[in-house]
Length: 122
Image 1 (spheres, rainbow, N blue to C red):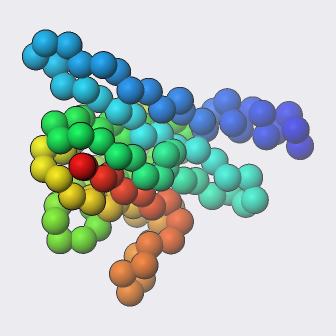
Image 2: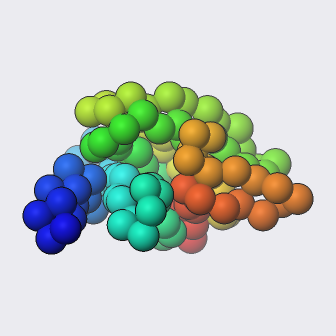
């Protein structure tokens, strides 16, 4: 089981990296997929990311097929993220932007369960 867990972690864990911007380049942060081993559940890692306005968020699928779909009324976004690819969005205004994977998460009566996350722009 330890070998399986290590192999799974190596395949699923994505280091969250922040790259410093240079002249003419915006800062960027990455949100990746991480496995939870009490079942075969995926989560966004980190689930909550706080950024400044103008920062690019990159969602990256390390293992498995995923989607990024916005929740709520303050933004509209839906992208497929096949394994080994990423999608990006620049957040220019302040607010909380919630999202989930339509394959591994769900929203019922406004409550998200499964693979859910949020970007807080402050």
